[in-house]
Length: 186
Image (spheres, rainbow, N blue to C red):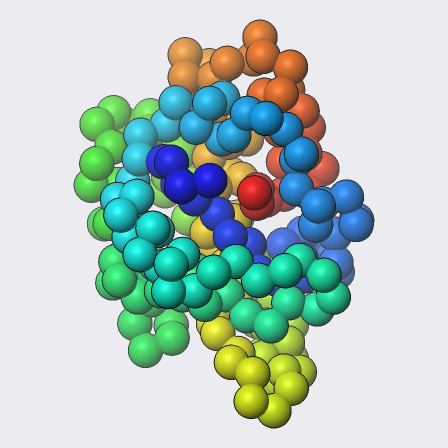
């Protein structure tokens, strides 16, 4: 999904306690995508995602994921990730620049606040996962995938009523998935 705010979630869990249920790792399996259901403005140019996806194709979602290289590429390109550290101030600036209403900006700022707190709770898990890669494999920044998936999920959960297509069955399915799993992935 490259339209609006693509997610490649490359971590084993973005829920509060431990790995999510297996159905969360399988995605929503719907024909509709985030942008079809929540008409939230595109905040990161889709060209950045396209370039990073080309450079770092989505890894298979079987077994323990080995990193979030595509997500790290996106956050590096936008200046949100600096020396492998998520810069909340830079993220807020980048992710709110194209938003035009106070309501949209509040949703984004609340999503960032929530996800930064959750990522701090998972720092040890991210560090442990990075140590667990096999020799010769790349361990990309785990927080990158988490933050993209988490922010995306929070936006969807809080999508303004006037921008949400609740009459479409797939959109209700996606909403249930986000409510249960806490993140979005393709």
